Amino acid sequence: MKEEVLQSFLKEAYLIWGSGGWLMVPLFCLAVFIYYTALDLFLRLNFHFLVRGRIHRLDDDQIKQGKSRSLIKARDLLKPQAADVEEVHRHFQEIRSEYLPIVTRRAKFLGILIGASPLMGLLGTVTGMLSTFSGMASDGRAFNLIVEGISEALITTQTGLMIAIPALVVLSFISQHRRRLMQAIARLERYNTRLTLRKLQQGTIA
Image (cartoon, rainbow, N blue to C red; front, side, top):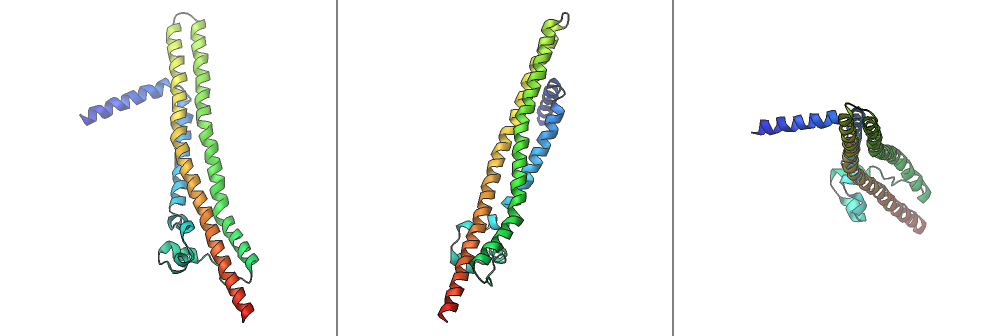
């Protein structure tokens, strides 16, 4: 029973694929590239120690005394020997330059790819309608050309939207994780700044 359902589904999918015209191939390639990029970026951010450890939500004592692997790695980013606040700021600017630009570039590129998907589907609408008008202007096989043109227009448009809509949801999660990464770095910088100010104050008192 399951095999029959699967065969029926595959047959229907093949018929739809064939009715979509030549643009179904670049749409498929675009879909693979979009979801590979999105999944790779999402997993990299989701399992980043600063995001996974929820550093942005921790107070000073938790950052100082936490025993989790993420917190241990996060404390390695601190610069407790910094001479002043400006040195702390420069240090964390370097950390931002290491972690954030590549994420930002890939997220922007992913957004461009997602935006291209419905546009490619719209291109399929145009080519399908051209086939439809060609069928209207001809005789003999006119009806078949009209049906094929309308089918191509609808299927490519639907496929472009089906690729783009879930990808936009994934992109929103990626943006959330990126924001948490920025907040975690900012949280560590504030913690490091307080450590440095406390050290400078103790040195002044002494």
